[in-house]
Image (cartoon, rainbow, N blue to C red; front, side, top):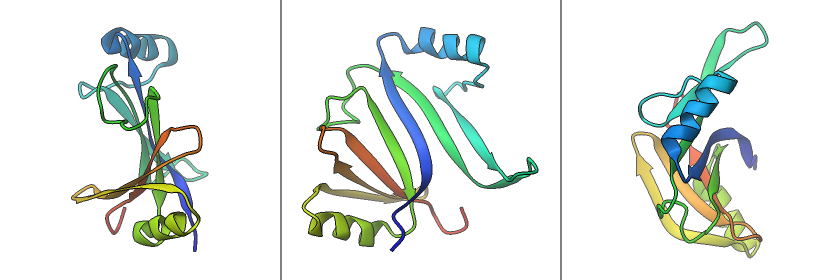
Length: 128
């Protein structure tokens, strides 16, 4: 079974999200959108868009979307078969959160790594 196939997103908290977003926009040229992040569309070796993107987003510190982790970041990894991977992780003794989510954006599940960081696993909808 193939496990992680790519990085779907990088999410982190900031004390002053607006100022930090502006810094990344000004100094690194990241096209930060009104929703608080940017989407990096994947491309092939010739620069042609391919299916997939990586989301980058800064949110306000103090939120609970990374709970039970207290880390200020969370990385979202793309996977092909979320249910099979979550079961494999459980069988291997990993701390898999029971909650999963199935929405128009795909299927999501979470595992806590040995350092206490919440890791998001994402199976995109078919065709993405």
